[in-house]
Image: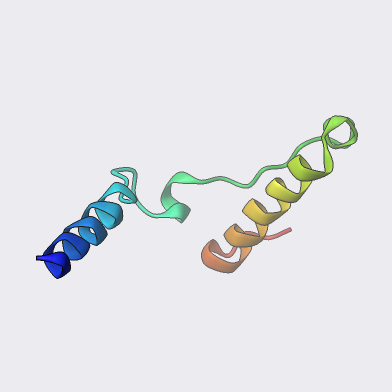
Length: 64
């Protein structure tokens, strides 16, 4: 019984991660904020944009 519950929980968790929008490359675009916008951002926000753009470079072939 415990194994069935664990399996069901895993299935629900994996299903919740699915999106109807397609792959990252199909739905995401590079983020290109201006120098002024970057200056106004927190370090965390800048790091999030960099991570997003690096993922796009790796997966989708975006150019810097």
